[in-house]
Length: 185
Image (cartoon, rainbow, N blue to C red; front, side, top):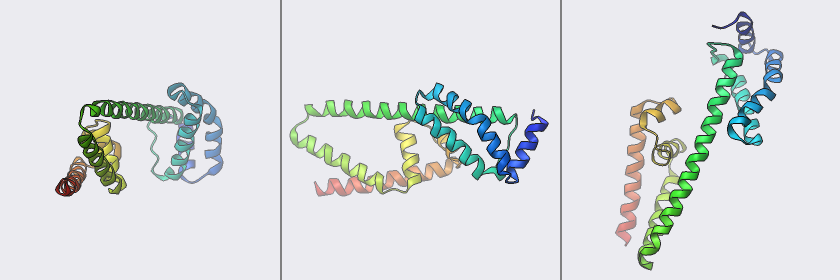
């Protein structure tokens, strides 16, 4: 249940009262940084997460909806962002490990096969970099992070159909570029 004081704070922030916003910032900034640090283990990342939260809070203040206390809202948001950062780091580590494993497996191939593999990998990476930002993000979330379409849709506030359409376009583009590459060979 939202307390009366929290409702007043929320209303003032929504109305653009910078003094109220600054007082909330001063009150919670340090404790939120400590909380984010306890999750991420990195002071710089913790500060960045908290600063980003307050930036978005002010920027989107007119859309702000708090169902509980301001404090629980802030701590919940910091927890989610910190965990998302940690997951991103884990995915990056898994990707690096996957790349290392893939490189270790390649030496069994002939030099010609290794060259073809590297060229094909370059074609794929170049094609992915040419994709629109959103499509790149969706592809990364699905193929590298292993998220399901529904999870991606929820994360990006899009419909599952949109995610499916974007992935279809990505696969078509990759297929076209790979076919061009294999045709040249």
